[in-house]
Length: 149
Image (cartoon, rainbow, N blue to C red; front, side):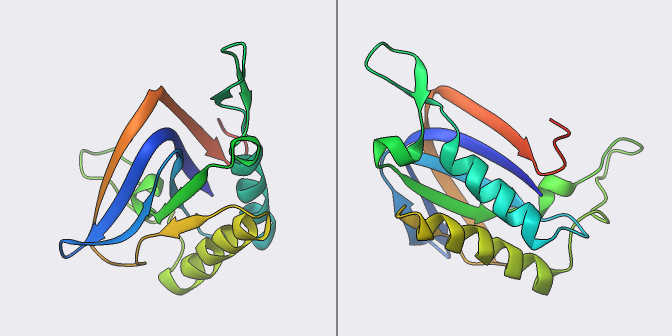
């Protein structure tokens, strides 16, 4: 499972011109589910996102998590994070999980974050979405449940 996490002052996702999810200060998460990912991968990513210390403390150091700040998460499924363009210019997506299973694991990540008291907004799985955000910092972190980066 792969994710791109951005610290934001605000973010939203729209489908057909209608906002379906929005947050203020918190984290914008793009989440890609890899073929063969398990519940263990989903739990790892959810926990890591919530505990990632990328918000500033009173001394200006990145030492606080979204749990510490009371921020929210906008989590959007994005299978293109599994795109492979190493051998060609057109990416292949054979590493992405099948949609039904990918949605189950995506929903598990969102539910696990909610179970920790975090407000989680989402997009709509398998739709064309437009994401808007204000990256604060900018701060962007890549996570992978296989710990490749």
